[in-house]
Image (cartoon, rainbow, N blue to C red; front, side, top):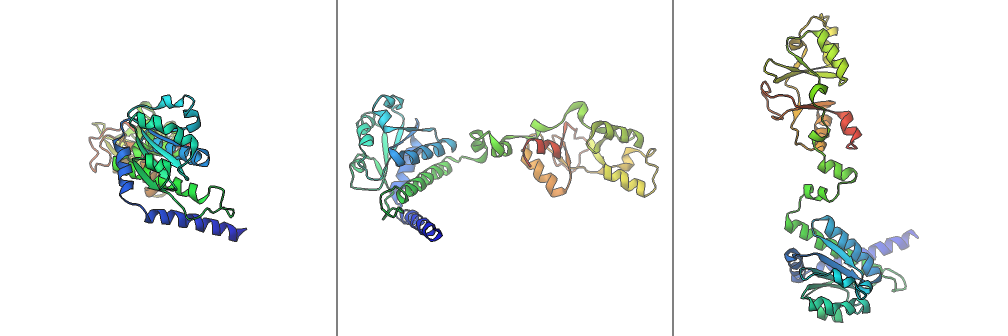
Length: 325
């Protein structure tokens, strides 16, 4: 069974590589037609080709090209009303003679729509109707009977991916745009959630002034439960941070913790982040610096924070609850 499976995978990979070697100017023309399309990309196909077409349409839609799948049989019974004169059609057929697909082509041509044929036979009826023909032919199916669509559907799927990704690159479609179409799941959270969406603000921010004594520092840290507090100067600018670790180190040196000022207890130049930064970037900075909190300041990573006011704080637990870890 393993040997048979390896043989099938080998056949299908060879079909894709052979198709890659046949790519020519027609592929560039097809991408150009899709790029210039002012309506939707309509993908159609029957049977297994139709299932592949559904995936291709979904890939176009998720990468910035409005697209939908039109079942050719349903099209002949009213669904052709979905088409507009601004659309572009991709028709899948290994034989190029699929009756249901051919039946809707007169309407496609009458509307003046650009037609891209993704075909297994270049001398077929559908090939002659197409404005651009993409060669997705295979020398043999992986099915030992040579009957079940296997290598041919794999080749068609790969060609569809090549079209979608090439169009994505031509449009300059970026990760942030991609996230807008994928708001659910960890991908959407990583690409859409900002620090400002998760940070604690106002009275929830642990802050003490430079002159306050260790007693007030302990009370603030206990009340806000971040395991640290920021230290601000008389202008409200962030000048330092005091963590549980700072307090332990002072106790180990025998310092009079309760009477020391925050200015002497603090570590200067605390790590900060801007509110518009991706929450995923906050995760990266915390992991890189082995810390659990970041203050949020408009100036971000400015070295001199004496006049940079704190507008929020974000903790590792916030990022964990948001599903970013």
